[in-house]
Image (cartoon, rainbow, N blue to C red; front, side, top):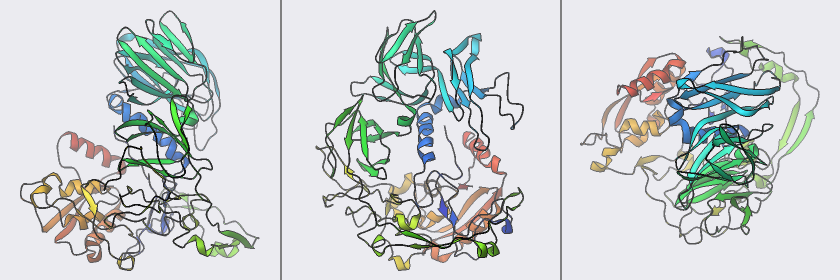
Length: 578
């Protein structure tokens, strides 16, 4: 299952175009955006800040990764009593997607603009195909204000075992080292975590177990890293781990050290190049793994300790960075009047004259906050062919606005064999004791030697790319697939310099000529931006291809559906949708 966002990662507007691509009411857009910042409160901020919603969405991504294929084939069913309107704040919002005797129940008691009430004594009745009715949970429960969750019906646990229903959200699943399947559920704050299994299933673990007329019901004593249940039936054995909601927001699944592992950390963890990279921001950083490797080695890492089913390692906190000081120059201020504008009458930005009546503050940034010793970029040496941190601004919290302990923009490049042993203040390198550092494997795209900073465009601080394979070896890389890999509508055309070295998917590589980039979009501003970029000789950097843009206008809601329909029918799909 595919899920898209607007926007998942905030960005910065170009200011060097003849027609700047700033969105404003003056230029006919529904939103009044700043000249440069296009952050949009995205899960990943403009400078790489990981916001709380980033962790919340990761839990949803894990659900879709493991169960999206099942969910995609399940049609929607709505309850008999639906909210009468968007303003109905009293009717609980819920729905079901199901097929056969399996399904998922969705409940949403959260509204970002309206306070929704608690709901007491809630129990759901779901009629599946064939007429069978499932009632869950076994006893009525409260649904707190702000709660939103997904509960499974007929979930496959592996080993021929089935979870009839659960009042906890499926997160992910992996195989343990002995091959036993493990399903991870996330408890919902304020609602008891209860699992219903077949009558012939035996359950071992920290739960109260009782057999009703239909099911073996287990209610978790306390969700957490120790809430590991072993379920045994006539066909085999499976395990179920029920994490607390707080722990589930720290959960990720990484493929590292030769296998898939569950990872718990309050900090951002990235698995890449056979190693784990952590972007530290918490006061007491740690990492827990399941299954755990025999040992982990890194500068500043403590001894392993048991944390329920996990093994946890404590890390030394990142050093405190020089902080800016804030001085109020003029305290008195007159708030700008609320204004709306644009086609949708959305909030308008203050006028220039409003700032004459604004409060004034002076921010002083310590000199050592911006030098090479003070910035929190990854200090490990990297091969000459791998990129450095994107820019000084994105790797410095004092200029990025990521907060006092932010670690935005930290390059996560694999540590090379000649890297120093010193621990980075931002990305500790973690590896099992038996491994050795090797040069990262060749990828489809590898950075070419980059131009000096003074030669690069001020808005595009990233390295130029070249094809990793040339001549007849490029048959698996088409221009279209490379454009898509470079980021779709957002960055697709900006990968054009890389195409000069790449052939098409045909047997004979194409090394020069005319290229038409098809663009499906609802936004005429995108068309102007892409057409301008295609004619930008500086951006093309001497490409032997001449690019033109063929736009197709479509409503925003139609771009994705039309593209998916064309893909299913094996028809023409756009090079870049947006």
